[in-house]
Length: 577
Image (cartoon, rainbow, N blue to C red; front, side):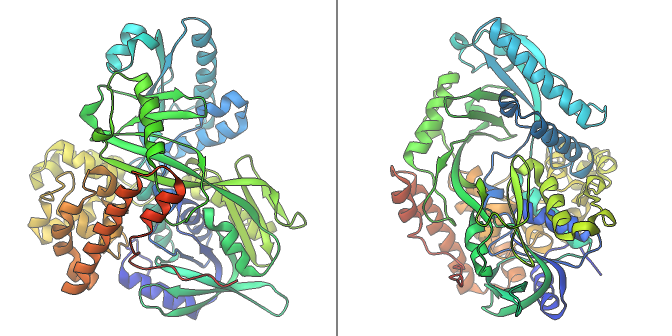
C-alpha cells in the first residue's frame, strides 16, 4: 500500500519494484521539476518511478533565493503572460497546494525620486497585484501594494539608508524552504503510488533495436548494485546536467543548457533592523534582502559557471559583490564577520533552439520540453514557482493526445501536510500546552510539517526526550532529526544537515557542533556502526572546511579546485557515452 514515508526500506523496495515491473514513466532527477513531474504523473494514474543521483533537492532546488514569486522585474520587459502564470501558481501554493510551506512575505521597493519613479513603480506593482487577483479567480491571497512616505519607510525598515530614499512601495510575495518543498512533493507522489529512490544514478539509457529509449541502467550508490529499469517513457529533469544525461541516449537531439551561478549570504536576524524584505534593482539584475525568523538571506549573483557541476562554490568576489550592494542600501555596514552562511547554486539557463531542430518541442517563455530520442523527453528551464506548470507540460507532452482523457489534477491536490492544515493550526495552543512548548515552537513546526506534525509528535509520545531541542541547535527538536530519517528519506548525516535541518548555512559552524548529538540520534536508524558514523562526521567536517576555504579565493576555477579537495561521501559514477 502506498505510503508518504521515505525511508531506506521504501527506497530499496522501490528499486526492486522498478526492476521487476515496467513503468509507464521513469523520471530522472529529484529536484523540484522532477518531483513535480512524478506527482503529476502519479495523480493521473500512471505507474511512475523517480530516481535521483544524490539526495532529494541536492542541486539547484536547495540553493535558490527561496522565494515563490511572480517575477516583478519581468513586467519591465513586458512579459505579462509569464508573470501572470507565476502569480497564478503562487496563489495555488498559498491557498491549496502548500499553505504550510509557502508563507506570505512583505517587501519594500525603495524609491529614490519622489514623482516619476513612484508613478511608474506604482503602475508596475499595481499590474502585479491585478494579475495576482485575476490569477486567483478574484480571491485576494495577499495584500495589495501600499505607498509609504520616507518616515513610514524608515519605521518599517530603520536600517534603510535614509539619504538614498524618499519613500517606498510595500508589496507582497512569498518565501519557502525549497528543499522542504521538494521532499514534500516526493512524499506526496509516493502517497499516490510513485516509486522513489535517491542516491541512485543513471549511468546509461537502454534502447531497443530501432533506437527507442526503453528505460535506464541505474547504479544504487549505497550498495554498488546495478538495476535495469524498463519504462515506456523516460523523462530527464536533470537541470544543469541535461546535456550530459541526454548524451546517454545516443541521439543527436535535446536541449542546450548553460549553468549560471547564483550566490546568497546569510546574516543574523538582529544584524539588520527591518520588519520587511527589500527588493533592490542593481546594474545587473535585482538583489533581495529576505527576512526569515532567525536570519536574513541576501542575494543573488548571476555569473556563468564552467567548473564542476556538483559543487558550485562562492568566491571572495561573489561575497564582496553582495555585501557592497547590500551596504549601498543599508546603514548596517555588513562585513564578512557578520556572515553565518553562504551557499551557491546553478541555474540551468536554456539556450535558443535545440540540438536537433527536427525533433518535436514545446516551448514556453522560460522552459522547454523536447524529445531528444524516441521514448525520451527532456525538460529544462523555468523556476521554482512554476514547477507545477513545467510538470504538467512534461506529462502532457509524453501522453500526447491521451492527455485530454488523463488531465492534470495537481492544481487541486494538496501536498502532505496541507490537507487539514487549517484545523491543525487551530490546535496550536493545545499542542504547545501538551508538549511543554511555546507557541513560537509550534508555529515553527507547523510551517515545516503542517498537519503532518502529528507524525512528529507521535515520535515524542514514544520517546519524550525527542521533544527537547538540540543542544547545539535549539531551533530544532531532536524529533526533527529522527523524523528526517523515519519519514523524509535522509540516508546520511549530510542529508540531514544540508536538506532537512539546514544547519550548513544557518549556523556559522555549519552545524559541526551538533554532529555528535545528531549522530547518536540516528546511527542505529541509518545502520551506522562506530567507524561508519565517524567517517560520515569527518566527511562533513572536511566538506564544510573546504567550502570555507573556497570562499577565500578569487576565481571560480580556484574555488572549485579547493572545494573538490574534500572527498565526496558517495562519489558519482562516470556516465557512459
